[in-house]
Image 1 (cartoon, rainbow, N blue to C red):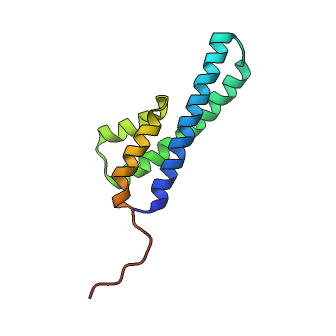
Image 2: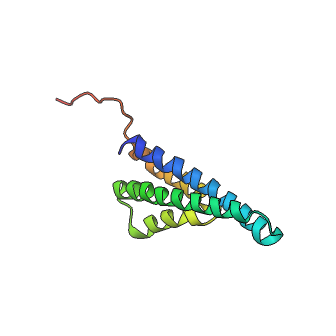
Image 3: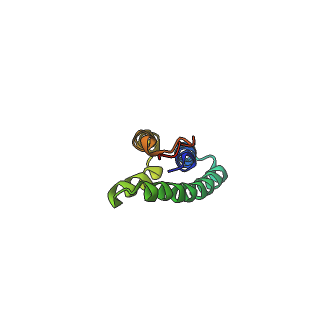
Length: 110
């Protein structure tokens, strides 16, 4: 597996998790304090688009790592639970890191 597959997943996991926390803060401001209605709309739409990109990259990683359906589902859903993507991302990286090709050419065995 190429390192770029893991890197894409990691970046999107962090971006999605941060945007979800921003969205939660906007929701608290909107429903708790009655402010930020327009900001909440914009942030929710941005998070939605980023989450779709996260789903594509996570599915790509899962298919290349040959995960079972339950594990893949947990990784995909972690983008909807505040702070879960941070923890799931760390666990995934520890598991996938040994499978990643270094990118250095190996000498041919004779």
